[in-house]
Amino acid sequence: MEISIRDWNRTDLKQIQQAWLEYCRNVARADMFLRENAEATMKQWLNDRFQQPECIGFVAESQRAFAGFLIGRIDNWESVPPVIEPRRIGIIDAVYVREDLRKQKIGSRLIDLAIETMRKANAIAVETTYEAWNDASNQVWHRAGFAPWMVHAYRIL
Image (cartoon, rainbow, N blue to C red; front, side):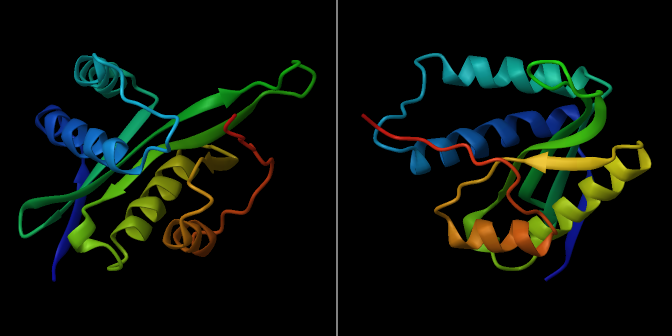
């Protein structure tokens, strides 16, 4: 199966929005609910990100059909409290691959392309957030060279 990856364009935003919201509907924990205005909020967020020069986006296609996406950005990281020198880092906000196309290295290819793009933009590191309980997600990120740095723990009350 031929998979191509290209830079995102404005016409991709609706499909990215639909895929991301559907994913959120299906994987949310018992304490997580989509906002009533989630569609409009997501549309605005994507439009804003698309216009920001520090943001990157890639779309994967299989036989010219949408297969997945990656959205990220390159930014200066500041510590809290601000006692460490700022660093230029890449941040991968979201990676999504259609369920029927998973386990074909599409996510890995999107991540590799984002890392290379961020490296060329002089980022010294790349960070992301992913679901710790998802074994497939863990494997993809570990194969891409990511390792836990700080653990963000969560407890439902």
